[in-house]
Length: 255
Image (cartoon, rainbow, N blue to C red; front, side, top):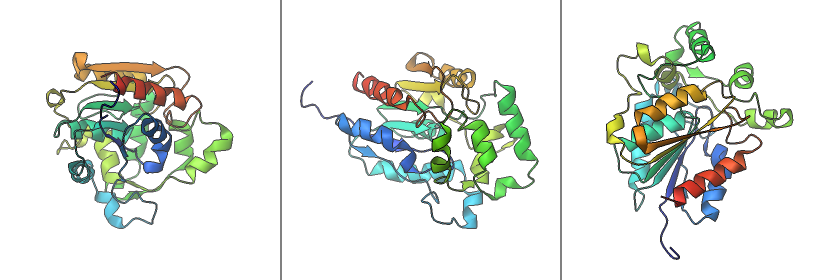
């Protein structure tokens, strides 16, 4: 309807990233008439983080996001990528939101991995004793294997150079939820009563379509899961990301 006010969009970036990683999606939503708010998760602003980042957990990030969301004039559409996709689910279970757009989302507590790569990645992390209390620096080999495998070679250095350190605690809470007695990544899925669009890449190794399908199943008929062929985990910047952004805008505006 001409002149109708569109809901704001709150974008939540992923691990080792910042709001910059969703700039392309921001431009598409703003061009469609949405006001976009893209907060920076605690200690992810690109400056050398304090040791406290190592023990900053998902619930700490969530508390900050709740404060950010309180400043919005109306319930937003939440768009989250990877770890941000999990935080978006956690936030939607606690606050009123218009809809969820989850891009290659990390799974909440209780959703088992569906591939050997996911299991192997989690086991490899356990070789680094005490990582759950430490600041984790970006690892180029790990990024190339799990996130940038389909990103053109001439773009990898530029993207990797912008990555920031990550929380060992939050990483543990996502990848080793079965060992987390606090169930930090748990989501009350029944409390999420809005429509959801989940988008995965067919070649995503970190959060593969088979696992994202298990996430979608938690929300029953409220969720729509679409898999993009020939795309990996960095589907927010790989060739073809514009189609995903356009699809997200069209879906949001069709609600």
